[in-house]
Length: 66
Image (cartoon, rainbow, N blue to C red; front, top):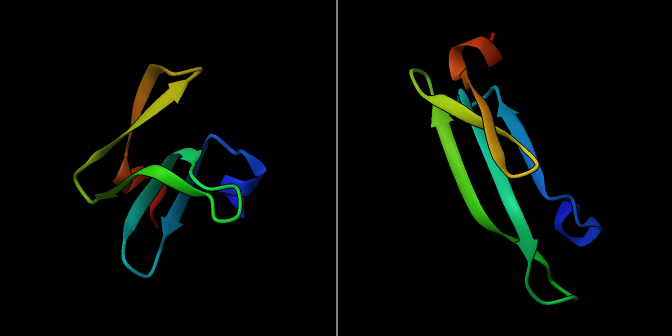
């Protein structure tokens, strides 16, 4: 749904599995779009935060999870 709408990046704060999932670069077939890049970050990791394609900061996963 997000890839079809052309949302360039979206994050899932996955509380059940204790991780942050980042999806980037929507593309693929018009009828079945998907994200070309996916990364999962867990406790102890830093999630890179980009604005307009440029790294702005990194956020510790521990600060995003309860």
